[in-house]
Length: 608
Image (cartoon, rainbow, N blue to C red; front, side, top):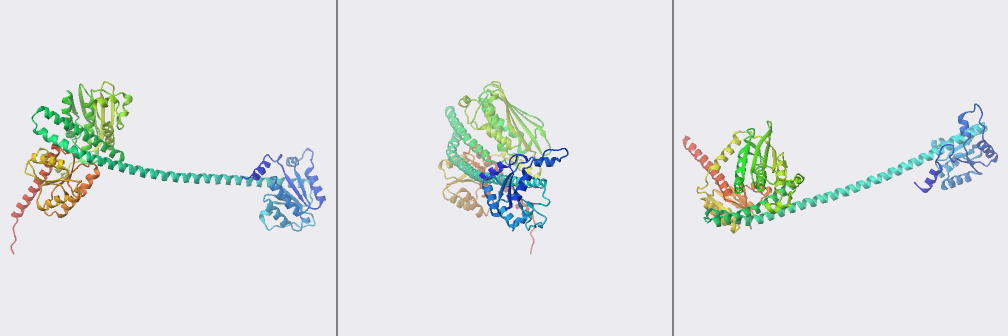
Protein backbone atom coordinates (compact mmCIF):
# COMPACT_ATOMS: atom_id res chain seq x y z
CA UNK A 1 0.00 0.00 0.00
CA UNK A 2 1.44 3.37 -1.04
CA UNK A 3 1.50 6.54 1.03
CA UNK A 4 -1.29 8.01 -1.06
CA UNK A 5 -3.39 4.89 -0.57
CA UNK A 6 -2.87 5.14 3.16
CA UNK A 7 -4.17 8.71 3.13
CA UNK A 8 -7.17 7.68 1.07
CA UNK A 9 -7.83 4.83 3.43
CA UNK A 10 -7.61 7.20 6.38
CA UNK A 11 -10.09 9.56 4.76
CA UNK A 12 -12.58 6.77 4.40
CA UNK A 13 -12.60 5.49 7.94
CA UNK A 14 -15.76 6.03 9.92
CA UNK A 15 -19.44 5.45 9.27
CA UNK A 16 -21.78 6.96 6.74
CA UNK A 17 -22.55 10.02 8.86
CA UNK A 18 -19.06 11.31 9.75
CA UNK A 19 -17.36 10.29 6.48
CA UNK A 20 -15.88 13.17 4.49
CA UNK A 21 -17.87 13.40 1.20
CA UNK A 22 -16.50 15.60 -1.57
CA UNK A 23 -18.76 16.66 -4.44
CA UNK A 24 -17.46 18.54 -7.49
CA UNK A 25 -19.99 20.73 -9.34
CA UNK A 26 -18.84 20.66 -12.97
CA UNK A 27 -20.89 23.31 -14.72
CA UNK A 28 -20.44 26.87 -16.01
CA UNK A 29 -23.96 27.79 -14.93
CA UNK A 30 -23.68 29.26 -11.46
CA UNK A 31 -27.41 29.08 -11.09
CA UNK A 32 -27.12 25.29 -11.07
CA UNK A 33 -24.45 25.57 -8.44
CA UNK A 34 -26.80 27.54 -6.23
CA UNK A 35 -29.61 25.03 -6.66
CA UNK A 36 -27.37 22.12 -5.72
CA UNK A 37 -25.76 23.99 -2.84
CA UNK A 38 -29.16 24.88 -1.36
CA UNK A 39 -30.30 21.28 -1.70
CA UNK A 40 -27.11 19.86 -0.17
CA UNK A 41 -26.65 22.35 2.61
CA UNK A 42 -30.30 22.64 3.71
CA UNK A 43 -31.20 20.96 6.99
CA UNK A 44 -34.79 19.80 7.25
CA UNK A 45 -36.25 19.87 10.67
CA UNK A 46 -37.52 16.59 11.91
CA UNK A 47 -41.25 16.45 11.58
CA UNK A 48 -43.83 13.95 12.64
CA UNK A 49 -44.27 11.29 9.98
CA UNK A 50 -41.00 12.13 8.13
CA UNK A 51 -39.21 9.03 6.74
CA UNK A 52 -36.21 7.80 8.69
CA UNK A 53 -34.17 7.49 5.49
CA UNK A 54 -34.76 11.15 4.65
CA UNK A 55 -33.76 12.26 8.15
CA UNK A 56 -30.64 10.13 7.93
CA UNK A 57 -29.69 11.57 4.55
CA UNK A 58 -30.31 15.14 5.64
CA UNK A 59 -27.81 14.83 8.53
CA UNK A 60 -24.88 14.05 6.19
CA UNK A 61 -22.41 16.88 5.62
CA UNK A 62 -20.76 17.42 2.24
CA UNK A 63 -17.72 19.31 0.95
CA UNK A 64 -18.70 21.13 -2.25
CA UNK A 65 -16.17 22.28 -4.87
CA UNK A 66 -16.96 24.09 -8.11
CA UNK A 67 -15.38 23.84 -11.57
CA UNK A 68 -16.24 26.29 -14.30
CA UNK A 69 -15.35 23.97 -17.19
CA UNK A 70 -14.86 20.35 -18.05
CA UNK A 71 -11.08 20.74 -18.30
CA UNK A 72 -10.96 22.44 -14.90
CA UNK A 73 -13.06 19.61 -13.42
CA UNK A 74 -10.64 16.96 -14.73
CA UNK A 75 -7.69 18.86 -13.23
CA UNK A 76 -9.45 19.12 -9.88
CA UNK A 77 -10.17 15.37 -9.90
CA UNK A 78 -6.49 14.63 -10.62
CA UNK A 79 -5.29 17.07 -7.93
CA UNK A 80 -7.62 15.58 -5.35
CA UNK A 81 -6.31 12.07 -6.03
CA UNK A 82 -2.72 13.24 -5.72
CA UNK A 83 -3.53 15.02 -2.46
CA UNK A 84 -5.04 11.87 -1.04
CA UNK A 85 -8.43 13.51 -0.58
CA UNK A 86 -10.36 12.30 -3.64
CA UNK A 87 -13.62 13.57 -5.08
CA UNK A 88 -16.46 11.12 -4.50
CA UNK A 89 -19.03 12.52 -6.91
CA UNK A 90 -19.05 14.81 -9.93
CA UNK A 91 -22.44 16.47 -10.41
CA UNK A 92 -23.18 18.10 -13.77
CA UNK A 93 -25.91 19.07 -16.17
CA UNK A 94 -25.85 17.07 -19.38
CA UNK A 95 -27.11 19.93 -21.54
CA UNK A 96 -24.19 22.15 -20.56
CA UNK A 97 -21.57 19.66 -21.73
CA UNK A 98 -20.87 19.16 -25.39
CA UNK A 99 -19.48 15.69 -24.90
CA UNK A 100 -20.50 14.29 -21.52
CA UNK A 101 -19.12 10.81 -22.28
CA UNK A 102 -15.64 12.15 -23.15
CA UNK A 103 -15.63 14.23 -19.98
CA UNK A 104 -16.66 11.29 -17.83
CA UNK A 105 -14.00 9.14 -19.49
CA UNK A 106 -11.31 11.76 -18.75
CA UNK A 107 -12.39 11.95 -15.10
CA UNK A 108 -12.36 8.16 -14.89
CA UNK A 109 -8.82 8.04 -16.16
CA UNK A 110 -7.81 10.46 -13.42
CA UNK A 111 -9.81 8.60 -10.74
CA UNK A 112 -11.50 5.31 -11.71
CA UNK A 113 -13.58 5.27 -8.52
CA UNK A 114 -15.39 8.63 -8.83
CA UNK A 115 -19.17 8.52 -9.27
CA UNK A 116 -21.28 10.80 -11.42
CA UNK A 117 -24.64 12.46 -11.14
CA UNK A 118 -26.24 13.96 -14.27
CA UNK A 119 -29.10 16.44 -14.05
CA UNK A 120 -31.44 16.05 -17.00
CA UNK A 121 -34.02 18.71 -17.88
CA UNK A 122 -37.17 18.26 -19.86
CA UNK A 123 -35.67 19.59 -23.09
CA UNK A 124 -32.65 17.25 -23.08
CA UNK A 125 -33.06 13.58 -23.98
CA UNK A 126 -31.48 11.10 -21.54
CA UNK A 127 -27.91 10.27 -22.60
CA UNK A 128 -26.82 6.75 -23.51
CA UNK A 129 -23.45 5.22 -22.64
CA UNK A 130 -21.49 2.78 -24.72
CA UNK A 131 -19.34 1.74 -21.76
CA UNK A 132 -21.37 -0.36 -19.30
CA UNK A 133 -18.75 0.20 -16.54
CA UNK A 134 -19.31 3.98 -16.85
CA UNK A 135 -23.08 3.55 -16.92
CA UNK A 136 -23.04 1.65 -13.59
CA UNK A 137 -21.45 4.64 -11.81
CA UNK A 138 -23.73 7.34 -13.24
CA UNK A 139 -27.02 8.34 -11.71
CA UNK A 140 -29.50 10.18 -13.94
CA UNK A 141 -31.49 12.75 -11.94
CA UNK A 142 -34.66 13.31 -13.90
CA UNK A 143 -36.94 16.37 -13.62
CA UNK A 144 -38.36 17.77 -11.54
CA UNK A 145 -35.12 18.23 -9.58
CA UNK A 146 -36.36 18.36 -6.01
CA UNK A 147 -33.99 18.98 -3.14
CA UNK A 148 -34.80 15.53 -1.81
CA UNK A 149 -33.79 13.93 -5.12
CA UNK A 150 -30.51 15.83 -5.15
CA UNK A 151 -29.74 14.89 -1.53
CA UNK A 152 -30.68 11.28 -2.22
CA UNK A 153 -28.41 11.19 -5.29
CA UNK A 154 -25.55 12.80 -3.37
CA UNK A 155 -25.83 10.30 -0.52
CA UNK A 156 -26.16 7.33 -2.86
CA UNK A 157 -23.32 8.19 -5.26
CA UNK A 158 -20.80 9.32 -2.65
CA UNK A 159 -21.48 6.14 -0.71
CA UNK A 160 -20.98 4.16 -3.95
CA UNK A 161 -17.64 5.88 -4.56
CA UNK A 162 -16.59 5.31 -0.99
CA UNK A 163 -17.55 1.62 -1.19
CA UNK A 164 -15.67 1.17 -4.45
CA UNK A 165 -12.57 2.77 -3.01
CA UNK A 166 -12.83 0.67 0.08
CA UNK A 167 -13.24 -2.45 -2.04
CA UNK A 168 -10.22 -1.35 -4.06
CA UNK A 169 -8.18 -1.00 -0.89
CA UNK A 170 -9.40 -4.38 0.37
CA UNK A 171 -8.42 -5.92 -2.97
CA UNK A 172 -5.02 -4.28 -2.76
CA UNK A 173 -4.59 -5.45 0.81
CA UNK A 174 -5.58 -8.98 -0.18
CA UNK A 175 -3.24 -8.81 -3.15
CA UNK A 176 -0.52 -7.47 -0.87
CA UNK A 177 -1.08 -10.26 1.64
CA UNK A 178 -1.25 -12.86 -1.14
CA UNK A 179 1.96 -11.51 -2.65
CA UNK A 180 3.62 -11.43 0.75
CA UNK A 181 2.39 -14.93 1.58
CA UNK A 182 3.47 -16.19 -1.84
CA UNK A 183 6.88 -14.70 -1.25
CA UNK A 184 7.02 -16.38 2.16
CA UNK A 185 5.99 -19.70 0.61
CA UNK A 186 8.61 -19.28 -2.10
CA UNK A 187 11.20 -18.44 0.54
CA UNK A 188 10.13 -21.43 2.61
CA UNK A 189 10.24 -23.64 -0.48
CA UNK A 190 13.69 -22.33 -1.29
CA UNK A 191 14.88 -22.85 2.28
CA UNK A 192 13.35 -26.33 2.22
CA UNK A 193 15.16 -27.09 -1.01
CA UNK A 194 18.40 -25.83 0.50
CA UNK A 195 17.73 -27.90 3.64
CA UNK A 196 17.07 -30.98 1.51
CA UNK A 197 20.31 -30.40 -0.38
CA UNK A 198 22.17 -29.92 2.90
CA UNK A 199 20.52 -33.09 4.23
CA UNK A 200 21.51 -34.99 1.11
CA UNK A 201 25.07 -33.72 1.43
CA UNK A 202 25.10 -34.60 5.13
CA UNK A 203 23.69 -38.04 4.34
CA UNK A 204 26.30 -38.57 1.63
CA UNK A 205 29.00 -37.41 4.05
CA UNK A 206 27.64 -39.73 6.74
CA UNK A 207 27.57 -42.64 4.31
CA UNK A 208 31.10 -41.85 3.20
CA UNK A 209 32.19 -41.60 6.83
CA UNK A 210 30.42 -44.86 7.58
CA UNK A 211 32.14 -46.54 4.64
CA UNK A 212 35.46 -45.09 5.73
CA UNK A 213 34.89 -46.29 9.27
CA UNK A 214 33.90 -49.76 8.10
CA UNK A 215 36.93 -49.88 5.81
CA UNK A 216 39.15 -48.67 8.64
CA UNK A 217 37.79 -51.28 11.05
CA UNK A 218 38.09 -53.99 8.43
CA UNK A 219 41.70 -53.00 7.69
CA UNK A 220 42.64 -52.73 11.36
CA UNK A 221 40.90 -56.01 12.10
CA UNK A 222 42.80 -57.71 9.28
CA UNK A 223 46.13 -56.31 10.39
CA UNK A 224 45.54 -57.21 14.05
CA UNK A 225 44.10 -60.67 13.43
CA UNK A 226 47.14 -61.74 11.39
CA UNK A 227 49.68 -61.36 14.26
CA UNK A 228 47.06 -62.61 16.75
CA UNK A 229 46.80 -65.72 14.62
CA UNK A 230 50.48 -66.34 15.27
CA UNK A 231 50.25 -65.54 18.98
CA UNK A 232 47.15 -67.59 19.77
CA UNK A 233 48.00 -70.37 17.34
CA UNK A 234 51.55 -70.87 18.62
CA UNK A 235 50.34 -70.74 22.23
CA UNK A 236 47.69 -73.32 21.36
CA UNK A 237 50.31 -75.62 19.81
CA UNK A 238 52.74 -75.26 22.73
CA UNK A 239 50.09 -75.86 25.39
CA UNK A 240 49.41 -79.32 23.94
CA UNK A 241 53.07 -80.39 24.23
CA UNK A 242 54.19 -78.44 27.29
CA UNK A 243 54.65 -80.58 30.42
CA UNK A 244 55.93 -77.90 32.79
CA UNK A 245 53.06 -76.42 34.80
CA UNK A 246 54.66 -72.99 35.13
CA UNK A 247 55.32 -72.77 31.42
CA UNK A 248 51.82 -74.04 30.67
CA UNK A 249 50.41 -71.28 32.91
CA UNK A 250 52.44 -68.66 31.04
CA UNK A 251 51.28 -70.00 27.68
CA UNK A 252 47.67 -70.07 28.86
CA UNK A 253 47.98 -66.43 29.96
CA UNK A 254 49.34 -65.49 26.54
CA UNK A 255 46.53 -67.37 24.84
CA UNK A 256 43.80 -65.82 27.01
CA UNK A 257 45.22 -62.33 26.57
CA UNK A 258 45.25 -62.78 22.82
CA UNK A 259 41.68 -64.03 22.87
CA UNK A 260 40.62 -61.04 25.00
CA UNK A 261 42.19 -58.66 22.50
CA UNK A 262 40.51 -60.55 19.68
CA UNK A 263 37.14 -60.24 21.45
CA UNK A 264 37.53 -56.47 21.66
CA UNK A 265 38.01 -56.20 17.90
CA UNK A 266 35.15 -58.62 17.28
CA UNK A 267 32.83 -56.52 19.45
CA UNK A 268 33.87 -53.34 17.65
CA UNK A 269 33.14 -54.91 14.27
CA UNK A 270 29.77 -56.22 15.46
CA UNK A 271 28.83 -52.81 16.87
CA UNK A 272 29.83 -51.13 13.60
CA UNK A 273 27.71 -53.55 11.57
CA UNK A 274 24.74 -53.14 13.91
CA UNK A 275 24.88 -49.34 13.82
CA UNK A 276 25.19 -49.25 10.04
CA UNK A 277 22.37 -51.76 9.56
CA UNK A 278 24.59 -54.12 7.57
CA UNK A 279 24.39 -57.04 9.99
CA UNK A 280 21.95 -59.65 8.70
CA UNK A 281 20.86 -62.71 10.63
CA UNK A 282 20.93 -66.06 8.89
CA UNK A 283 18.07 -68.53 9.07
CA UNK A 284 19.29 -72.03 9.78
CA UNK A 285 18.11 -74.98 11.76
CA UNK A 286 19.68 -74.87 15.21
CA UNK A 287 19.39 -77.20 18.22
CA UNK A 288 18.25 -74.73 20.85
CA UNK A 289 18.65 -76.95 23.91
CA UNK A 290 22.06 -78.12 22.76
CA UNK A 291 23.28 -74.56 22.15
CA UNK A 292 22.24 -73.47 25.65
CA UNK A 293 23.88 -76.51 27.24
CA UNK A 294 27.10 -76.16 25.25
CA UNK A 295 27.33 -72.44 26.02
CA UNK A 296 27.01 -73.09 29.74
CA UNK A 297 29.58 -75.86 29.49
CA UNK A 298 31.93 -73.46 27.71
CA UNK A 299 31.70 -70.91 30.53
CA UNK A 300 31.65 -73.44 33.34
CA UNK A 301 35.46 -73.67 33.43
CA UNK A 302 35.64 -69.93 34.12
CA UNK A 303 33.00 -70.30 36.85
CA UNK A 304 34.77 -73.24 38.47
CA UNK A 305 38.02 -71.30 38.62
CA UNK A 306 36.18 -68.72 40.78
CA UNK A 307 34.46 -71.37 42.91
CA UNK A 308 31.03 -70.60 41.43
CA UNK A 309 28.24 -72.96 40.48
CA UNK A 310 26.23 -72.65 37.25
CA UNK A 311 22.78 -74.21 37.36
CA UNK A 312 20.68 -74.84 34.26
CA UNK A 313 16.93 -75.31 34.01
CA UNK A 314 15.29 -76.12 30.68
CA UNK A 315 11.51 -76.10 30.91
CA UNK A 316 9.70 -78.90 29.04
CA UNK A 317 7.91 -76.39 26.78
CA UNK A 318 11.20 -75.24 25.22
CA UNK A 319 11.34 -76.54 21.60
CA UNK A 320 14.27 -78.77 20.70
CA UNK A 321 14.94 -77.11 17.33
CA UNK A 322 14.16 -73.64 15.98
CA UNK A 323 15.23 -71.52 13.03
CA UNK A 324 17.69 -68.68 13.52
CA UNK A 325 21.31 -67.62 13.52
CA UNK A 326 23.19 -70.02 15.77
CA UNK A 327 26.34 -67.91 15.92
CA UNK A 328 24.62 -64.74 17.11
CA UNK A 329 22.27 -66.62 19.44
CA UNK A 330 25.30 -68.23 21.04
CA UNK A 331 27.04 -64.84 21.16
CA UNK A 332 24.19 -63.26 23.14
CA UNK A 333 24.17 -66.17 25.59
CA UNK A 334 27.94 -66.06 26.01
CA UNK A 335 27.90 -62.32 26.71
CA UNK A 336 25.07 -62.49 29.25
CA UNK A 337 26.16 -65.66 31.07
CA UNK A 338 29.81 -64.59 30.89
CA UNK A 339 28.93 -61.22 32.42
CA UNK A 340 27.03 -62.94 35.23
CA UNK A 341 30.09 -65.06 36.06
CA UNK A 342 32.43 -62.11 35.63
CA UNK A 343 30.65 -59.89 38.17
CA UNK A 344 29.91 -62.63 40.71
CA UNK A 345 32.42 -63.43 43.46
CA UNK A 346 30.36 -65.78 45.64
CA UNK A 347 27.37 -67.99 45.11
CA UNK A 348 26.51 -68.87 41.54
CA UNK A 349 24.52 -68.30 38.37
CA UNK A 350 21.17 -69.83 37.46
CA UNK A 351 20.13 -70.04 33.80
CA UNK A 352 16.39 -70.64 33.30
CA UNK A 353 15.12 -71.24 29.75
CA UNK A 354 11.37 -71.18 29.09
CA UNK A 355 8.88 -70.66 26.27
CA UNK A 356 6.02 -68.40 27.46
CA UNK A 357 4.42 -68.12 23.98
CA UNK A 358 4.21 -70.50 21.05
CA UNK A 359 2.01 -70.87 17.97
CA UNK A 360 2.14 -72.76 14.69
CA UNK A 361 4.79 -70.45 13.24
CA UNK A 362 7.16 -69.32 15.96
CA UNK A 363 8.00 -69.40 19.66
CA UNK A 364 9.01 -66.74 22.15
CA UNK A 365 12.15 -68.02 23.85
CA UNK A 366 12.98 -66.53 27.25
CA UNK A 367 16.30 -66.95 29.04
CA UNK A 368 16.57 -65.62 32.61
CA UNK A 369 20.15 -65.38 33.92
CA UNK A 370 20.17 -64.76 37.66
CA UNK A 371 23.40 -64.19 39.57
CA UNK A 372 24.41 -63.40 43.15
CA UNK A 373 26.94 -60.80 42.11
CA UNK A 374 27.63 -57.16 42.90
CA UNK A 375 24.30 -55.92 41.54
CA UNK A 376 23.55 -52.61 39.85
CA UNK A 377 22.16 -49.32 41.08
CA UNK A 378 18.67 -49.04 39.41
CA UNK A 379 19.52 -45.45 38.41
CA UNK A 380 22.42 -46.75 36.32
CA UNK A 381 20.64 -49.61 34.56
CA UNK A 382 20.14 -47.84 31.21
CA UNK A 383 23.80 -46.89 31.10
CA UNK A 384 24.61 -50.57 30.71
CA UNK A 385 23.13 -50.59 27.21
CA UNK A 386 25.14 -47.60 25.97
CA UNK A 387 28.33 -48.37 24.09
CA UNK A 388 31.55 -48.01 26.12
CA UNK A 389 29.54 -47.34 29.30
CA UNK A 390 29.47 -49.26 32.59
CA UNK A 391 27.32 -48.62 35.62
CA UNK A 392 30.35 -48.16 37.86
CA UNK A 393 33.65 -46.86 36.51
CA UNK A 394 35.56 -48.80 39.17
CA UNK A 395 34.16 -52.01 37.70
CA UNK A 396 36.16 -51.36 34.54
CA UNK A 397 39.39 -51.25 36.50
CA UNK A 398 38.53 -54.32 38.57
CA UNK A 399 36.79 -56.58 36.05
CA UNK A 400 37.97 -55.12 32.72
CA UNK A 401 35.95 -54.86 29.54
CA UNK A 402 34.96 -52.17 27.06
CA UNK A 403 31.24 -51.90 27.83
CA UNK A 404 30.27 -53.21 24.38
CA UNK A 405 28.87 -56.60 25.39
CA UNK A 406 25.43 -55.58 26.60
CA UNK A 407 24.72 -53.00 23.84
CA UNK A 408 25.58 -55.65 21.23
CA UNK A 409 23.52 -58.28 23.03
CA UNK A 410 20.45 -56.01 23.17
CA UNK A 411 20.67 -55.02 19.51
CA UNK A 412 21.11 -58.66 18.44
CA UNK A 413 18.12 -59.63 20.58
CA UNK A 414 16.00 -56.94 18.97
CA UNK A 415 17.02 -58.21 15.53
CA UNK A 416 15.67 -61.57 16.70
CA UNK A 417 12.34 -60.00 17.64
CA UNK A 418 13.06 -59.81 21.37
CA UNK A 419 15.02 -57.71 23.84
CA UNK A 420 17.44 -57.75 26.77
CA UNK A 421 16.24 -56.30 30.08
CA UNK A 422 17.62 -56.31 33.60
CA UNK A 423 16.26 -56.24 37.14
CA UNK A 424 18.89 -55.61 39.78
CA UNK A 425 19.57 -54.39 43.28
CA UNK A 426 22.93 -53.04 44.36
CA UNK A 427 24.76 -55.70 46.37
CA UNK A 428 22.01 -58.32 45.91
CA UNK A 429 22.65 -59.64 42.40
CA UNK A 430 21.01 -59.16 39.02
CA UNK A 431 18.64 -60.96 36.67
CA UNK A 432 19.16 -60.39 32.94
CA UNK A 433 16.28 -61.51 30.73
CA UNK A 434 16.92 -62.30 27.08
CA UNK A 435 13.94 -62.91 24.76
CA UNK A 436 13.88 -63.87 21.10
CA UNK A 437 10.99 -64.75 18.79
CA UNK A 438 12.28 -67.55 16.57
CA UNK A 439 10.49 -69.50 13.81
CA UNK A 440 9.78 -73.11 14.65
CA UNK A 441 11.69 -75.84 12.86
CA UNK A 442 9.54 -78.02 10.60
CA UNK A 443 11.29 -81.34 10.04
CA UNK A 444 11.46 -82.74 6.51
CA UNK A 445 13.79 -84.99 4.59
CA UNK A 446 15.87 -82.16 3.16
CA UNK A 447 16.42 -80.45 6.51
CA UNK A 448 16.88 -83.67 8.48
CA UNK A 449 19.83 -84.79 6.37
CA UNK A 450 22.20 -81.92 7.30
CA UNK A 451 21.26 -82.33 10.96
CA UNK A 452 22.15 -86.01 10.93
CA UNK A 453 25.39 -85.19 9.17
CA UNK A 454 26.23 -82.55 11.77
CA UNK A 455 25.66 -85.07 14.55
CA UNK A 456 27.90 -87.55 12.83
CA UNK A 457 30.72 -85.07 12.12
CA UNK A 458 30.84 -83.99 15.75
CA UNK A 459 32.03 -87.44 16.73
CA UNK A 460 34.37 -88.04 13.80
CA UNK A 461 38.12 -87.90 14.13
CA UNK A 462 39.73 -86.23 11.09
CA UNK A 463 43.04 -88.01 11.67
CA UNK A 464 42.66 -89.82 8.36
CA UNK A 465 45.25 -89.04 5.76
CA UNK A 466 43.58 -85.95 4.29
CA UNK A 467 45.66 -84.22 1.66
CA UNK A 468 45.39 -80.47 2.31
CA UNK A 469 46.70 -77.59 0.23
CA UNK A 470 47.51 -74.58 2.44
CA UNK A 471 47.72 -71.25 0.56
CA UNK A 472 49.10 -68.53 2.86
CA UNK A 473 51.55 -65.70 2.14
CA UNK A 474 52.25 -64.89 5.80
CA UNK A 475 55.19 -66.99 7.02
CA UNK A 476 53.93 -67.04 10.61
CA UNK A 477 50.38 -67.96 9.70
CA UNK A 478 51.62 -70.62 7.28
CA UNK A 479 53.79 -72.23 9.95
CA UNK A 480 50.99 -72.18 12.54
CA UNK A 481 48.37 -73.69 10.22
CA UNK A 482 50.79 -76.29 8.83
CA UNK A 483 51.73 -77.53 12.28
CA UNK A 484 48.10 -77.74 13.37
CA UNK A 485 47.18 -79.73 10.27
CA UNK A 486 50.15 -82.07 10.61
CA UNK A 487 49.34 -82.63 14.29
CA UNK A 488 45.86 -83.75 13.24
CA UNK A 489 47.26 -86.32 10.85
CA UNK A 490 46.91 -84.43 7.58
CA UNK A 491 49.33 -84.41 4.67
CA UNK A 492 50.05 -80.75 3.94
CA UNK A 493 51.35 -78.96 0.85
CA UNK A 494 51.95 -75.26 1.52
CA UNK A 495 52.36 -72.49 -1.06
CA UNK A 496 52.52 -68.71 -0.65
CA UNK A 497 50.67 -67.37 -3.71
CA UNK A 498 47.42 -67.78 -5.58
CA UNK A 499 49.16 -68.63 -8.86
CA UNK A 500 50.99 -71.52 -7.19
CA UNK A 501 47.72 -72.74 -5.73
CA UNK A 502 46.07 -72.85 -9.16
CA UNK A 503 49.03 -74.81 -10.57
CA UNK A 504 49.07 -77.25 -7.63
CA UNK A 505 45.33 -77.96 -7.98
CA UNK A 506 45.87 -78.65 -11.67
CA UNK A 507 48.54 -81.23 -10.89
CA UNK A 508 47.29 -82.81 -7.63
CA UNK A 509 43.93 -84.08 -6.39
CA UNK A 510 43.60 -82.46 -2.97
CA UNK A 511 40.95 -83.31 -0.39
CA UNK A 512 40.77 -79.73 0.91
CA UNK A 513 42.18 -76.28 0.09
CA UNK A 514 42.68 -73.66 2.80
CA UNK A 515 42.89 -70.38 0.88
CA UNK A 516 44.08 -67.03 2.24
CA UNK A 517 42.34 -64.05 0.62
CA UNK A 518 44.87 -61.21 0.78
CA UNK A 519 47.94 -62.20 -1.22
CA UNK A 520 50.17 -60.25 -3.59
CA UNK A 521 49.58 -60.88 -7.27
CA UNK A 522 46.65 -63.27 -7.60
CA UNK A 523 44.30 -62.97 -4.61
CA UNK A 524 42.53 -65.87 -2.98
CA UNK A 525 39.28 -64.90 -4.68
CA UNK A 526 40.91 -64.88 -8.12
CA UNK A 527 42.68 -68.15 -7.43
CA UNK A 528 39.42 -69.82 -6.36
CA UNK A 529 37.67 -68.67 -9.54
CA UNK A 530 40.56 -70.03 -11.64
CA UNK A 531 40.50 -73.37 -9.80
CA UNK A 532 36.78 -73.74 -10.42
CA UNK A 533 37.18 -72.91 -14.10
CA UNK A 534 39.87 -75.55 -14.67
CA UNK A 535 38.25 -78.17 -12.44
CA UNK A 536 37.73 -81.40 -14.39
CA UNK A 537 37.85 -83.99 -11.61
CA UNK A 538 35.69 -84.02 -8.49
CA UNK A 539 34.80 -80.80 -6.68
CA UNK A 540 37.59 -79.86 -4.26
CA UNK A 541 36.35 -78.00 -1.15
CA UNK A 542 37.92 -74.54 -0.77
CA UNK A 543 37.77 -72.92 2.66
CA UNK A 544 38.62 -69.22 2.96
CA UNK A 545 41.31 -68.62 5.55
CA UNK A 546 41.33 -64.88 6.23
CA UNK A 547 41.74 -62.13 8.77
CA UNK A 548 38.67 -60.36 7.33
CA UNK A 549 35.61 -60.76 9.52
CA UNK A 550 32.84 -58.87 7.72
CA UNK A 551 29.76 -60.55 6.26
CA UNK A 552 30.49 -58.91 2.90
CA UNK A 553 33.75 -60.87 2.67
CA UNK A 554 31.90 -64.10 3.45
CA UNK A 555 29.40 -63.45 0.65
CA UNK A 556 32.21 -62.56 -1.75
CA UNK A 557 33.95 -65.86 -0.99
CA UNK A 558 30.83 -67.94 -1.52
CA UNK A 559 30.03 -66.14 -4.77
CA UNK A 560 33.57 -66.90 -6.01
CA UNK A 561 32.96 -70.63 -5.58
CA UNK A 562 34.41 -71.21 -2.11
CA UNK A 563 32.64 -73.63 0.21
CA UNK A 564 33.37 -72.33 3.70
CA UNK A 565 34.80 -69.35 5.56
CA UNK A 566 37.23 -69.51 8.49
CA UNK A 567 38.30 -66.33 10.28
CA UNK A 568 41.73 -65.86 11.80
CA UNK A 569 43.06 -66.39 14.33
CA UNK A 570 42.51 -70.11 13.87
CA UNK A 571 42.52 -72.56 16.77
CA UNK A 572 42.93 -76.29 17.07
CA UNK A 573 39.22 -76.68 17.78
CA UNK A 574 38.19 -74.66 14.72
CA UNK A 575 40.62 -76.53 12.45
CA UNK A 576 39.32 -79.83 13.84
CA UNK A 577 35.72 -78.76 13.18
CA UNK A 578 36.44 -77.82 9.56
CA UNK A 579 38.40 -81.01 8.93
CA UNK A 580 35.64 -83.14 10.47
CA UNK A 581 33.04 -81.58 8.23
CA UNK A 582 34.94 -81.93 4.97
CA UNK A 583 36.31 -85.36 5.87
CA UNK A 584 32.71 -86.53 6.20
CA UNK A 585 31.85 -84.83 2.91
CA UNK A 586 34.70 -86.71 1.23
CA UNK A 587 33.56 -89.95 2.85
CA UNK A 588 30.00 -89.46 1.60
CA UNK A 589 31.25 -88.64 -1.90
CA UNK A 590 33.45 -91.76 -1.94
CA UNK A 591 30.54 -93.86 -0.68
CA UNK A 592 28.22 -92.53 -3.41
CA UNK A 593 30.92 -93.16 -6.04
CA UNK A 594 31.41 -96.77 -4.94
CA UNK A 595 27.67 -97.40 -4.92
CA UNK A 596 27.38 -95.97 -8.40
CA UNK A 597 30.25 -98.18 -9.64
CA UNK A 598 28.66 -101.28 -8.14
CA UNK A 599 25.36 -100.42 -9.74
CA UNK A 600 27.03 -99.86 -13.08
CA UNK A 601 28.86 -103.21 -12.86
CA UNK A 602 25.63 -105.05 -12.13
CA UNK A 603 23.89 -103.60 -15.16
CA UNK A 604 23.72 -105.89 -18.22
CA UNK A 605 25.80 -104.85 -21.19
CA UNK A 606 24.00 -104.96 -24.50
CA UNK A 607 25.72 -106.74 -27.38
CA UNK A 608 25.78 -105.39 -30.89
